[in-house]
Length: 201
Image: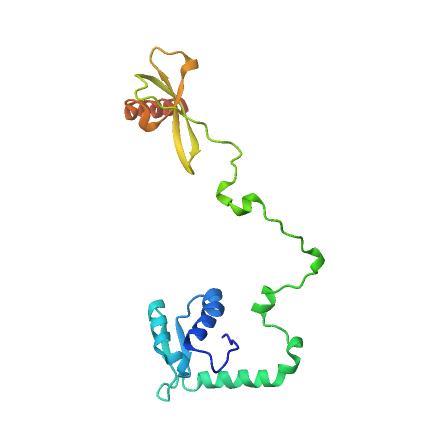
């Protein structure tokens, strides 16, 4: 149960904002709300709001003994507590949920915050190792064999590349190519995988 301070003059919209900021944002949307038929809760705005959120409103009536007077009894209890302790509100111990949210600590432990360039633009953070630029020719030529594979991060996505030796080329001319840039890629990749299986067995 949550109790929030408000004024009698608050509109349904102001009450909805109070509800949104203090209930929905911390606990989520309740499945059932028991109301004492206060005009703020029976207004068209609230009915539409709860309908959109998929919440069932259960109004307290004399014909439903499960909820009859439940809201009124809870309100009366809260009024008694407030009336009794309002002068010593500072001395009243917070409930467990509130006492955990607001720890007490010395102000001297708070360090000043200085905004950096990275804080302003987090997407511009520098990568520790920039991705290698791979130049792909239109047609690299026939493939002799695929030597090995690697994964690189390019434009925020993992990409697989293969070190390819072209026919009639020496080892110093091996190229890293993307799978779709390898001529007869499926055939050559099948050969690579088959050779790895035979090496491992």
